[in-house]
Image (cartoon, rainbow, N blue to C red):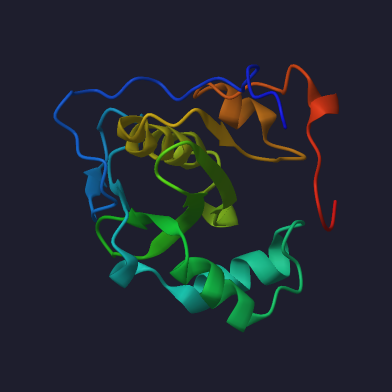
Length: 174
């Protein structure tokens, strides 16, 4: 039996009590509550995802996913709640994040990536905030992530290092 009393910080409360707990597609325009700059939008519409681009970004440039096969990435996308960042004028995808969740108690935020040409504009922080806010209505006990180099991005939206990392364990590659 595990002791789950100590947790990572919970996501911020939902902005409204009427938000639904379903993973419906939504478009969040720039200048909105997530700090997304004007001219960009975030969407959970899976039909807008450029799976080939996401695979190229992750398998060639992301330290945690280098060499990931396309089939494995497509399976991951199909089994996840996905977020895309898009240029409003061109519709081009500029960023991506996915969440693995039971929509009741737990979520894992992963594969967060912003195209190198679009970095430095606050898109990563806005994407993390949009994920946090989208998950808030679920009332999750814990949202986890792992990062080697973007702690400050996630800290801006409420994530913090584990207070007791010694009680966490992993099965598989570390």
